[in-house]
Amino acid sequence: MPTSRSRVAITVALSFMLVLFQLGGAEAQGRKSLKAATGPFTYEPAVAGSATFLGASGGPDYAADYWVTAPAGGAIFPSGGLTALAEIRVFGIEKVADADGVPLTEPMKIPLDSDLGMQIAGAFWLDPWSYEFAPGDSIPCDVLVSNPLVDSWAYGHYVVTMKAQAIGSGIGVGSGARFHLNLLAATDTDTTPPTVTIDDPADSSTKILGNIDVRIRANDPAPGSGVASMSATISSAGGTVNNEALELADDAPQPAGSDATATGTYTPTGGSGLAGTTEAGAFAGASRSGIGTYTISATATDADGNVGVASSTFQVKYSVEFLVQAGSINTGNPGNSNGHFKFTANRSATPSGVFIYDKTVVVELRKSSDDSLVATHVFGSLAGGANSNVVFTADPAYETRFRRGDIGASGSDTYYGRLLFVDVDGNPVQQAQSNNVTF
Ligand SMILES: [Ca+2]
Image (cartoon, rainbow, N blue to C red; front, side):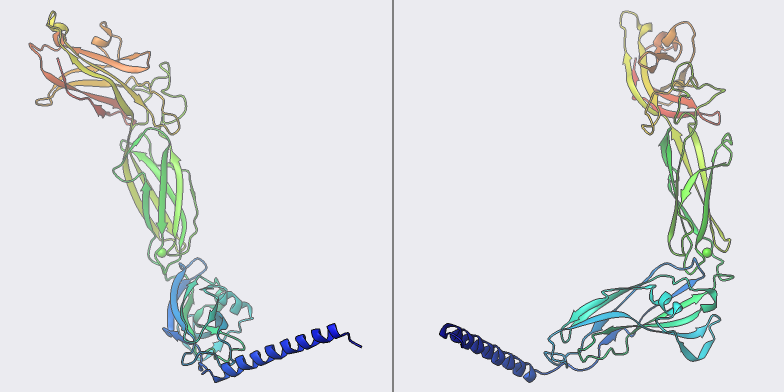
């Protein structure tokens, strides 16, 4: 027999349950009085997009979007819920025409659980793939379609339908958003070569002697067979470097519409290693450094053998810095008045910005007023040292002096120094020009 205390407890519990029951009933009663939003999901536009993929390497990813709208006109769904959790997915696949574009007498349903059905549905990436709708909610659905890479027997024209489905909500799936998917053979359909772009070194650019980055992009326009391979060669203007193959790493093959990228490094002579970095190993007329004018020729071939080309011509120079560019006037001995030039010529900091010893150096003294050539100093060991030659100093640096008495000037004048070195092809090429000096 229950104690009085437990009797109280049972009574309280029963009352509480009764209240809960009544509340629940009231809620249900309340919901029952709410109007239901009826009807299926609707889709806008009815056709979300279309894509054509040619062969196994054809096609970029196609992006499309459409809106999914839940039925409105009520506060609840027919089953009584305030919201309905829907799955958004590929709902049906139909083949409507064969690979030659001939319509099928009757569209062929491709079961979603067949290999082909799974392959095609798997190429559709939907965002979102699930959403909790309230009545009247309208949401954008993004779809990204990639090449399903079907076997050639399956080539043809398909209609893929995407729908939202909220099981148990009482909302119909509706007619869905359709996507036209054309899966065709690549053969004999691609006659357009890939476009090729040399990003680096850019055409008309100037690089400092060193490891020079090379970056080439190729893109086979869609629809197309895709970039199958890439290559590039380099030549110097005078042919000393002649169609040398560049070692590139590339990410070809790429489908049509997608960039394939090839990267690598070209290092002209002296750009790395020991050559030119010691006085004993100095560059000279017979063993020249790699400064000069170069052209890279790049090619990209698509899967159907169409070849696209591009070229880029660029300069390679030393990094020149003046340590001294000064004129001094000697009033006591005017002939000793002189213009003094001291400078470094280094390679690029990539890989090591060291001083380069290059005996092909030429310093021209030119009149600032008319650019006329007044005197030329070359590397050498003539008597007079830096007054007659360009010499290496221990810094290391290049140094030379032009004396008024040696250049036949009767009074002071204003000049500038023009620095040249002989390039890979044997041509003296200006690397720098000094400020004006007066002496
Ligand atoms: Ca092509």
